[in-house]
Amino acid sequence: MDVPLWLALLVVGVLGVKLIRPPWWLIAVLLVGGYLLADSLLAPAIDPVLK
Image 1 (cartoon, rainbow, N blue to C red):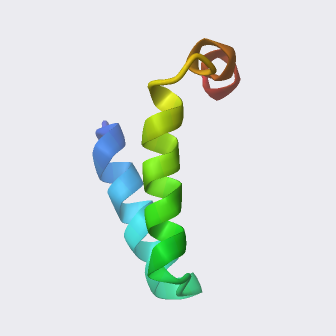
Image 2: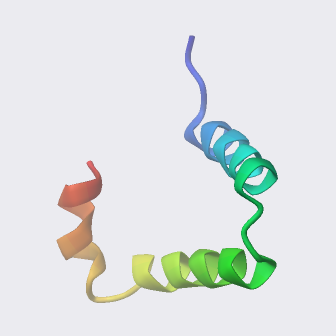
């Protein structure tokens, strides 16, 4: 079965929020921080770790 990455991340995110119940500000900080980090000078250094 071939599942798109965005769908897998969405399912994991929804299940994580329902099961762990983190505060919404923490979710927002992680999303914005990840977005900003992906567009920073550190992105080439992090990329090999994630592949």
